[in-house]
Length: 215
Image 1 (spheres, rainbow, N blue to C red):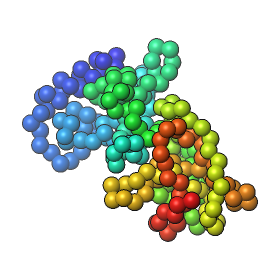
Image 2: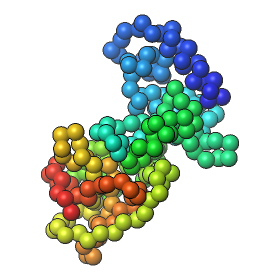
Image 3: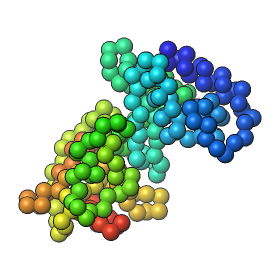
Image 4: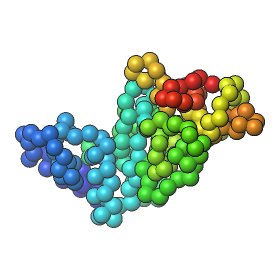
């Protein structure tokens, strides 16, 4: 059924190849030429369409690749043994772009309907700022499905009243971009990060007044 969806979208894109529009068409966005759209909209509408026809589907994304300063959105659906497998719609089936693309995701999150009490949105202190990218209660960390992960505990060598710390990549301007979060144990002066992928370099930091401070 997923292959039928891909064939349908490809056919419709051939018919709309000359469409020139700067506006969104809702669910019809998936039928517009690829250069007219982006992976976030395509992934979101694909998730809705596949759920509507009975295919369990998750909308996932990485805030930043390991090897380039960009984010990416895609889908994951169940295979025949009940395991969610990722793919970038509508040009790929399950796992078809894993080796060329999705294996290079950094941290990975699913977009959810239910609030997750373990997000910075909830665990921050009352007057603490959170980077916009991670300031949502509707994130579920799925990194463990993409990488071998560990829980990382490290000494906190800066003075802070914040309750959240971050794992960062460099951004395109040489600054830091938060892609993951952890909890600060103020009494023990420890930073605790869960689902940390092995063999990927992150820069731990705290975020205050829209600036990152390395820890």
